Image (cartoon, rainbow, N blue to C red; front, side, top):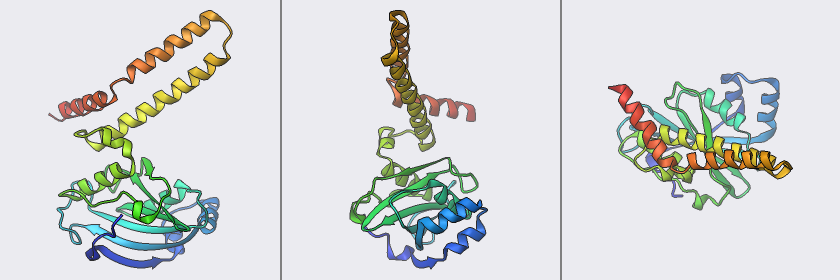
Amino acid sequence: MMDFPISTAVNTPIHKKTFVEKSPMTPAMKKAFASGVEKIIWRNKLSATTLPVQPGRRVVEVEVFEVALKSASVNNQLLHSIDKSLHYHVLFLLQHGERYMASMGYKGSPEQTVREYFATAWMAYAELPLQIIGPTMDDVVDNFLRQIHQGLNDYDGVPLDDAIQALAWQKRQDNEIAKLEKLLRAEKQPKRKFELKQQITTIQNSTGDIHGQAEHAYAQRRGQEY
């Protein structure tokens, strides 16, 4: 990862107490925040005023926070607490020792709550796959998420919202298959084993063209708009 343009630099430490006061936390979460986070630095402000891009319809600004963790265990609830205290999108550069992890929550607009967090593996800072790409802030954020979650690159030409829904659906299908396969391994009755195999095959066939399903969801949504 190359450092973001100097025009976006903030490099201001933020006291942990700031987020505790601005975001309602349970006592347990406050304790986890205090024990799990070493320090927070506001690294960058990405917006149409600091980058040669246009404002987005969904995204106005992205704050880049470097969060030093006391362990390699990542608590998404801590990230969510920070997200809730702000009105902008947040790109987290989590740091533990000499390793980094990029994490970002997906939300359709700043007013919406985070639906899901996507993250890279732990890696050297230079290996983080983050680049500012796109003519608008919407594109910048969408591309960050696609860079962080490589699986989203399978959906070229499909809006990010539909691609994420397709991935979530695929995950549910995979979990259901794993559940049925576990039952199959334990089943003794031939008739029941056959039924379970049929169920697994049906689900596998339904997940064959997940890209096509994402495109279909996009087409349906476009049809409802007109």
